[in-house]
Length: 357
Image (cartoon, rainbow, N blue to C red; front, side):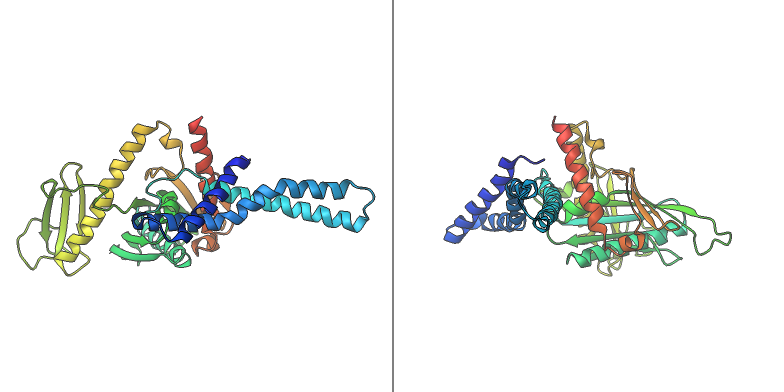
């Protein structure tokens, strides 16, 4: 149960911001930030008011139910209304818990998502393509902008690797729970005996880093150019468009050759490099801050097996929260992805609260 005082503060903050913004005298530097906060509060205030009013409503309905002078029909209506009110209270409590979840400063950032084929050969590359299409549908439903940065196709029509950016509101807060090893169990088209094969793909979700987030000095990077499609190697030939950038202090290496322009490849490579270096620094900070890091959901640990997609049984299971949905097709279509994400965020909150005690 959420303390009522905490819920009341949400409404008080909303009223305060509404008055402040209506004056038109807000510091221009803070206007965007306060407007966004107001918009977020506006979405949750109705649930907050219902949550606060539940106890009084319950008391009134209990009085009607317990009063023997009331006719049977009135009592039945009161019982139904009370049942509906209790169900709404549970839903409102869940939404309020998510709203009150301690905010990661990166939650509002855009992201760079990297999906790579793991064990399973060509079948794993087909699974990478399935995961990409799933995220594409999720982004479409949420009206987020997705842009492919780099792609490496396999002979089977799948992807050995695909890297893309996602732009919109609060992207990282949602997609960060996708980092880890995704496993698929199904019968490949090439399997003649009907045996189920297991393949895997790794998903890495990186908060997109700005110049102010991480400093990449020119003296800290080495840039090599080579002919696109080849194995690479140092070259000064101006016709060579592919770029490989090495961040010397961390050892992070990024290659980019999808564009015909060396300038565009360099810009894309630097974008990925900045995100990877920032994520490495972020992970180091988080580990130093808390020894319980690995017990938290959304830790970004890419070696952790997080989810299994079982086609013969039509189910998807998230191992971090032991949640199984027998709606695999709907999940891959992005229709019920929100349900899984909501449960992950709630579990994440519970773990964070436990770590505070």
